[in-house]
Image (cartoon, rainbow, N blue to C red; front, side, top):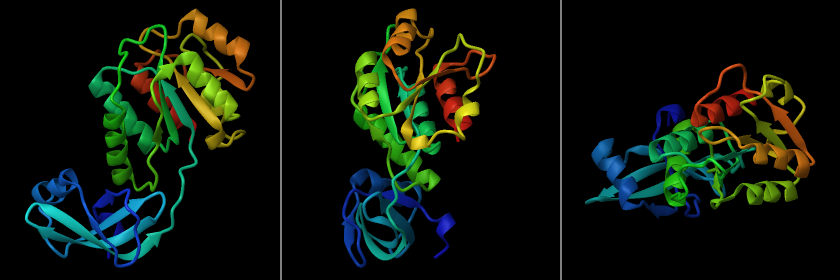
Length: 238
Protein backbone atom coordinates (compact mmCIF):
# COMPACT_ATOMS: atom_id res chain seq x y z
CA UNK A 1 0.00 0.00 0.00
CA UNK A 2 1.53 3.31 -1.14
CA UNK A 3 0.89 5.57 1.86
CA UNK A 4 1.37 9.04 0.45
CA UNK A 5 -1.20 8.68 -2.32
CA UNK A 6 -4.06 7.28 -0.24
CA UNK A 7 -7.15 9.16 0.87
CA UNK A 8 -7.16 9.80 4.63
CA UNK A 9 -10.38 9.68 6.66
CA UNK A 10 -10.79 10.78 10.29
CA UNK A 11 -12.98 8.67 12.58
CA UNK A 12 -13.74 8.99 16.29
CA UNK A 13 -14.42 5.24 16.50
CA UNK A 14 -11.96 2.88 18.16
CA UNK A 15 -9.67 1.43 15.49
CA UNK A 16 -8.10 -2.03 15.69
CA UNK A 17 -7.04 -4.83 13.36
CA UNK A 18 -10.04 -6.20 11.42
CA UNK A 19 -12.46 -3.76 13.06
CA UNK A 20 -15.28 -2.52 10.81
CA UNK A 21 -16.13 1.18 10.91
CA UNK A 22 -19.25 2.63 9.27
CA UNK A 23 -18.56 6.08 7.87
CA UNK A 24 -20.96 9.00 8.05
CA UNK A 25 -23.18 9.82 5.09
CA UNK A 26 -21.02 12.88 4.37
CA UNK A 27 -17.80 10.85 4.37
CA UNK A 28 -19.44 8.13 2.28
CA UNK A 29 -20.65 10.68 -0.25
CA UNK A 30 -17.15 12.09 -0.64
CA UNK A 31 -15.55 8.68 -1.21
CA UNK A 32 -18.20 7.29 -3.56
CA UNK A 33 -19.57 10.28 -5.45
CA UNK A 34 -16.66 12.73 -5.40
CA UNK A 35 -13.59 10.47 -5.43
CA UNK A 36 -15.38 7.63 -7.29
CA UNK A 37 -14.00 4.96 -5.00
CA UNK A 38 -15.25 1.36 -5.09
CA UNK A 39 -15.35 -1.72 -2.87
CA UNK A 40 -11.84 -3.00 -1.98
CA UNK A 41 -10.18 0.35 -2.66
CA UNK A 42 -7.51 1.34 -0.14
CA UNK A 43 -7.73 4.29 2.22
CA UNK A 44 -6.15 5.40 5.49
CA UNK A 45 -8.29 5.87 8.60
CA UNK A 46 -7.01 7.61 11.73
CA UNK A 47 -7.59 9.40 15.01
CA UNK A 48 -5.44 10.64 17.88
CA UNK A 49 -6.37 7.70 20.15
CA UNK A 50 -6.00 4.62 17.93
CA UNK A 51 -3.40 6.00 15.53
CA UNK A 52 -3.39 5.57 11.77
CA UNK A 53 -4.44 2.41 9.89
CA UNK A 54 -4.37 1.15 6.34
CA UNK A 55 -7.87 0.03 5.42
CA UNK A 56 -10.17 -1.19 2.66
CA UNK A 57 -13.64 0.11 1.95
CA UNK A 58 -16.88 -1.72 1.26
CA UNK A 59 -19.60 0.21 -0.57
CA UNK A 60 -23.19 -0.82 0.18
CA UNK A 61 -25.52 1.45 -1.76
CA UNK A 62 -24.64 4.93 -0.46
CA UNK A 63 -22.92 3.93 2.78
CA UNK A 64 -19.24 3.03 3.12
CA UNK A 65 -17.80 0.67 5.72
CA UNK A 66 -14.07 0.51 6.41
CA UNK A 67 -12.07 -2.53 7.53
CA UNK A 68 -8.83 -1.75 9.38
CA UNK A 69 -5.97 -3.88 8.03
CA UNK A 70 -2.67 -2.76 9.56
CA UNK A 71 -1.48 0.01 11.86
CA UNK A 72 0.79 2.53 10.12
CA UNK A 73 1.51 4.99 12.93
CA UNK A 74 0.87 5.11 16.65
CA UNK A 75 -1.28 7.84 18.12
CA UNK A 76 0.49 11.15 18.65
CA UNK A 77 -0.74 14.48 19.96
CA UNK A 78 0.32 17.53 17.99
CA UNK A 79 2.89 19.50 19.98
CA UNK A 80 2.28 22.88 18.40
CA UNK A 81 1.40 26.36 19.62
CA UNK A 82 -2.16 27.41 20.43
CA UNK A 83 -3.94 30.37 18.83
CA UNK A 84 -6.19 33.10 20.21
CA UNK A 85 -7.99 34.94 17.41
CA UNK A 86 -11.00 37.17 16.86
CA UNK A 87 -13.75 35.53 14.73
CA UNK A 88 -14.07 36.81 11.18
CA UNK A 89 -16.71 36.50 8.49
CA UNK A 90 -17.47 32.88 7.68
CA UNK A 91 -15.22 32.20 4.69
CA UNK A 92 -12.26 33.97 6.27
CA UNK A 93 -12.66 32.13 9.59
CA UNK A 94 -12.96 28.84 7.70
CA UNK A 95 -9.70 29.61 5.89
CA UNK A 96 -7.97 30.55 9.15
CA UNK A 97 -9.04 27.32 10.90
CA UNK A 98 -7.88 25.25 7.92
CA UNK A 99 -4.47 26.91 7.65
CA UNK A 100 -3.88 26.95 11.42
CA UNK A 101 -4.52 23.20 11.46
CA UNK A 102 -2.08 22.70 8.57
CA UNK A 103 0.53 24.68 10.55
CA UNK A 104 0.22 22.26 13.48
CA UNK A 105 -1.77 24.35 15.96
CA UNK A 106 -2.69 22.44 19.13
CA UNK A 107 -5.72 24.42 20.36
CA UNK A 108 -7.78 27.26 18.89
CA UNK A 109 -9.45 29.90 21.07
CA UNK A 110 -12.07 32.04 19.26
CA UNK A 111 -12.19 35.21 21.33
CA UNK A 112 -14.40 38.28 21.71
CA UNK A 113 -12.32 41.47 21.60
CA UNK A 114 -13.31 45.14 21.58
CA UNK A 115 -13.30 45.33 17.78
CA UNK A 116 -14.58 41.83 17.02
CA UNK A 117 -17.11 42.14 14.19
CA UNK A 118 -18.52 38.58 14.33
CA UNK A 119 -20.03 37.85 17.75
CA UNK A 120 -21.32 34.30 17.15
CA UNK A 121 -19.45 31.25 15.87
CA UNK A 122 -20.29 27.71 14.80
CA UNK A 123 -17.85 25.48 16.68
CA UNK A 124 -18.97 22.36 14.78
CA UNK A 125 -18.25 24.10 11.49
CA UNK A 126 -14.78 25.09 12.72
CA UNK A 127 -14.13 21.51 13.77
CA UNK A 128 -15.19 20.13 10.38
CA UNK A 129 -12.72 22.43 8.64
CA UNK A 130 -10.02 21.35 11.08
CA UNK A 131 -10.76 17.68 10.35
CA UNK A 132 -10.56 18.27 6.60
CA UNK A 133 -7.20 20.00 6.99
CA UNK A 134 -5.86 17.21 9.23
CA UNK A 135 -6.90 14.61 6.65
CA UNK A 136 -5.10 16.57 3.94
CA UNK A 137 -1.85 17.29 5.77
CA UNK A 138 -1.16 13.94 7.43
CA UNK A 139 -1.47 15.00 11.06
CA UNK A 140 -3.01 12.51 13.48
CA UNK A 141 -4.76 14.84 15.90
CA UNK A 142 -7.49 17.43 15.47
CA UNK A 143 -6.89 20.78 17.17
CA UNK A 144 -9.15 21.39 20.13
CA UNK A 145 -11.64 24.14 19.32
CA UNK A 146 -12.40 26.03 22.52
CA UNK A 147 -15.76 27.74 23.17
CA UNK A 148 -16.13 31.40 22.25
CA UNK A 149 -15.21 33.48 25.31
CA UNK A 150 -14.28 37.02 26.23
CA UNK A 151 -10.68 38.15 25.75
CA UNK A 152 -9.86 38.26 29.46
CA UNK A 153 -11.39 34.83 30.07
CA UNK A 154 -9.35 33.13 27.34
CA UNK A 155 -6.12 34.69 28.58
CA UNK A 156 -6.90 33.69 32.16
CA UNK A 157 -7.45 30.08 31.06
CA UNK A 158 -4.12 30.07 29.21
CA UNK A 159 -2.37 31.59 32.23
CA UNK A 160 -3.69 28.77 34.43
CA UNK A 161 -2.21 26.30 31.92
CA UNK A 162 1.18 28.01 32.40
CA UNK A 163 1.30 29.11 28.78
CA UNK A 164 3.60 31.82 27.49
CA UNK A 165 1.49 34.48 25.77
CA UNK A 166 2.98 35.79 22.53
CA UNK A 167 1.12 39.02 21.84
CA UNK A 168 1.46 39.95 18.16
CA UNK A 169 0.89 43.71 18.14
CA UNK A 170 0.50 45.44 14.80
CA UNK A 171 1.87 48.68 16.29
CA UNK A 172 5.22 47.16 17.25
CA UNK A 173 8.15 47.05 14.82
CA UNK A 174 10.34 44.71 16.87
CA UNK A 175 11.25 42.16 18.05
CA UNK A 176 10.07 39.78 15.32
CA UNK A 177 8.24 36.67 16.54
CA UNK A 178 10.71 34.26 14.91
CA UNK A 179 13.42 35.47 17.32
CA UNK A 180 11.76 33.45 20.10
CA UNK A 181 10.99 30.12 18.43
CA UNK A 182 14.27 28.47 19.44
CA UNK A 183 13.87 29.34 23.11
CA UNK A 184 10.35 28.07 23.73
CA UNK A 185 8.54 24.75 23.43
CA UNK A 186 5.76 25.23 20.89
CA UNK A 187 3.20 23.42 23.06
CA UNK A 188 3.84 25.93 25.89
CA UNK A 189 2.95 28.92 23.71
CA UNK A 190 -0.28 30.75 22.86
CA UNK A 191 -0.10 33.21 19.96
CA UNK A 192 -2.56 36.12 20.21
CA UNK A 193 -3.75 37.80 16.99
CA UNK A 194 -5.91 40.92 17.01
CA UNK A 195 -9.21 41.55 15.22
CA UNK A 196 -9.89 43.60 12.11
CA UNK A 197 -8.94 47.13 13.10
CA UNK A 198 -6.32 45.92 15.57
CA UNK A 199 -6.12 45.68 19.33
CA UNK A 200 -7.72 48.28 21.56
CA UNK A 201 -5.37 50.04 24.00
CA UNK A 202 -7.34 48.45 26.86
CA UNK A 203 -6.35 45.02 25.52
CA UNK A 204 -2.70 46.02 25.35
CA UNK A 205 -2.86 47.34 28.90
CA UNK A 206 -4.53 44.15 30.10
CA UNK A 207 -1.76 41.80 28.96
CA UNK A 208 0.95 44.15 30.21
CA UNK A 209 -0.68 44.35 33.63
CA UNK A 210 -2.04 40.85 34.14
CA UNK A 211 0.04 38.35 32.15
CA UNK A 212 3.20 37.13 33.84
CA UNK A 213 4.65 35.08 30.97
CA UNK A 214 4.25 37.68 28.22
CA UNK A 215 6.20 38.31 25.03
CA UNK A 216 5.15 41.32 22.95
CA UNK A 217 6.34 41.09 19.38
CA UNK A 218 5.90 42.15 15.78
CA UNK A 219 5.13 40.32 12.54
CA UNK A 220 7.25 42.78 10.58
CA UNK A 221 6.78 46.19 8.95
CA UNK A 222 3.44 45.47 7.25
CA UNK A 223 -0.08 45.44 8.69
CA UNK A 224 -1.84 42.24 7.61
CA UNK A 225 -5.41 41.06 7.46
CA UNK A 226 -6.28 39.17 10.62
CA UNK A 227 -6.31 35.71 9.03
CA UNK A 228 -3.04 36.42 7.19
CA UNK A 229 -1.44 37.59 10.43
CA UNK A 230 -2.42 34.33 12.14
CA UNK A 231 -0.87 32.24 9.36
CA UNK A 232 2.34 34.30 9.30
CA UNK A 233 2.71 34.11 13.09
CA UNK A 234 2.26 30.33 13.12
CA UNK A 235 4.61 29.86 10.16
CA UNK A 236 7.33 32.08 11.66
CA UNK A 237 7.12 30.16 14.92
CA UNK A 238 7.76 26.77 13.29
